[in-house]
Image 1: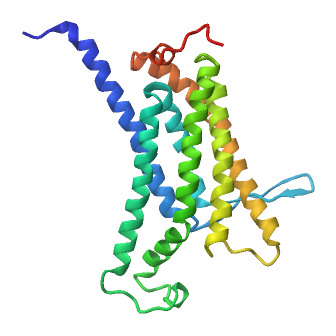
Image 2 (image 1 turned 90 degrees about the vertical axis):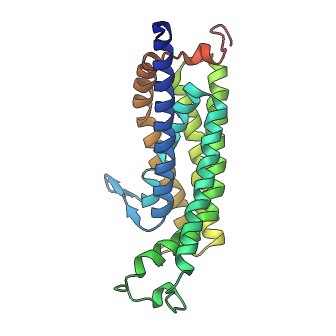
Image 3 (image 1 turned 60 degrees about the horizontal axis):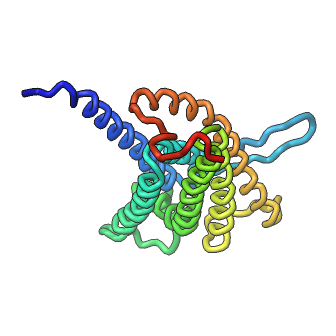
Length: 260
């Protein structure tokens, strides 16, 4: 006989798993996209205030990156630190998978006999693949180190702030964790990429230090603005999901409202 008393529980369990898969899938899909796009294009978003020009240059791979932190914040809020950390590790494994496919795709025949990427004609059908392969390989180490460090910092700071605020003040843990982790990410990815690869080309009009500072500042400023903007969808999302999933993030993780 059908037991109607179990229907609400099953309904909410299904919703929780679907929403988790949605955030995890968006996180992993975005990560794959940004790793492939990477430094394939440097975008100039410089702007003027009065007579002063503020240089703002970001690589195209940075554009979707902030959404990964929003995803881990949602997962941390509703599913806990362990599941958020698991998603981060899965994302790391995905990085290795992307690199493996690019590597094996480049060694299978026919392989163009070229000494360097620049020697391959731009109208060659293999040109785009080998260009993406070159850029991805050039930045993989920096990307992995920065990614793991920043994402785990984000998860740990998020839960630290959640406990310190007794589950209140969403904006503090959302912005505090993201802004801290993205500063680490911006520093790591630019400095490691420049130090260990030839992927970052310094224009003649800039010194090395000046250009690296511009890249770090630009990356962080973009992520800083994105982090502040995602506070609104985070608030709205938490308010909606608390009812939709029938989960109270405070009670779910045994955080006492009176805890200082």
